[in-house]
Image (cartoon, rainbow, N blue to C red):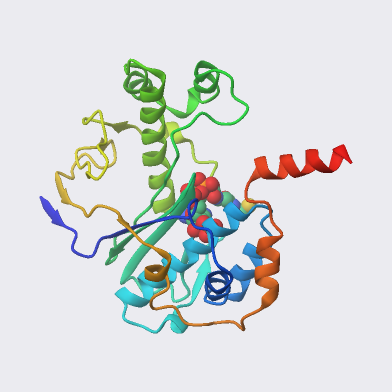
Length: 269
Ligand SMILES: CC(C)(COP(=O)(O)OP(=O)(O)OC[C@H]1O[C@@H](n2cnc3c(N)ncnc32)[C@H](O)[C@@H]1OP(=O)(O)O)[C@@H](O)C(=O)NCCC(=O)NCCS
């Protein structure tokens, strides 16, 4: 079976590099639904506010463009598990999902009734974990024996970490496609990787899982990197432009390490 996925969209935005200008932030913040604007207001760190706001813009952009409807007509709600879906739950013309971590917010979308999930992870050791062995021990039960063999056969630690996160993203994407959340035992899924490396700019199509064994061939687009102007090129205002959005954003520390630094500074006084 060859599945041509003409309606597939994969977008990535590097929010780590994005240092919003006032006008950019205000435009972005007024182009999302009120409850999302308010949620973003509450984030402690700038990086999280940027990641989430970009996610909302990606969702609205793909829906408005692919369904050919005005930006203001896009109405999103969340399932009780938090998954963003169209308010009209009978509308199965498009499926979408976003993820954010590290420096990137990413979106996957498919036309038609199939459902899509996505995840992204920066391949680095989590904060507070001394050795990779300790980290793997903590995560022991999330992976099957077959998956641990796949991870540990790599000769060096960074490669092991990459394999670990690659499998993690596959499991999370599955969970997110289905729309269930934490609580689902990750070990219940087993993925088989046949291409040991994921070269930058290349799409890997030979990954299999016990659930998808019958799917033989796909065509899939690579990720397109969007810049800010592309992200908002069809955006329309849903809310009044509020200066408080900018003040709120600039008052946040970028990330936890900046916050620790300024806390340490205030202790010196
Ligand atoms: C879904 C989940 C596994 C993703 O976690 P994560 O790795 O931290 O986050 P990711 O970067 O991969 O994805 C985050 C995005 O996925 C989407 N998302 C949230 N919940 C989702 C779900 N249940 N299924 C699919 N997508 C979901 C959202 O768009 C979210 O971004 P946003 O909140 O800024 O809009 C996790 O949030 C979870 O388990 N949620 C369920 C919580 C739950 O069961 N709540 C019940 C009420 S207490």
